[in-house]
Length: 114
Picture 1 (cartoon, one colour):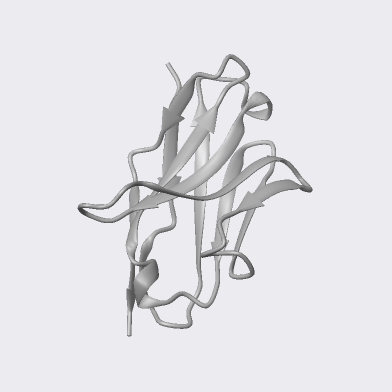
Picture 2 (cartoon, rainbow, N blue to C red):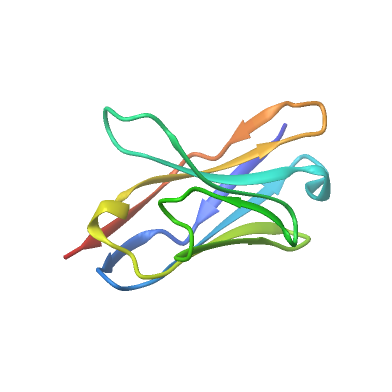
């Protein structure tokens, strides 16, 4: 059974930083394409960033220059800088295997106060 577990969320003031982590178990981590999404009530889940390996990344325009996705042998990370109130959301870790199976974390809330 594949499990993704996010950590690192919480509350921060505008202009602050948060680093999210996502650990995977039950699958060979190096073979996963990892991504981060976020969602607010009544809105679609939004893709923020994806990483295949170092140097092979994608960023949504809304976070480019502020968020950085990375990974090591054990987890994927999302470093979020200069956070603004509109970044408040539930953030989800996502993984896609070589067979195109998809997995989601349980979600972690980030609240940015003005």
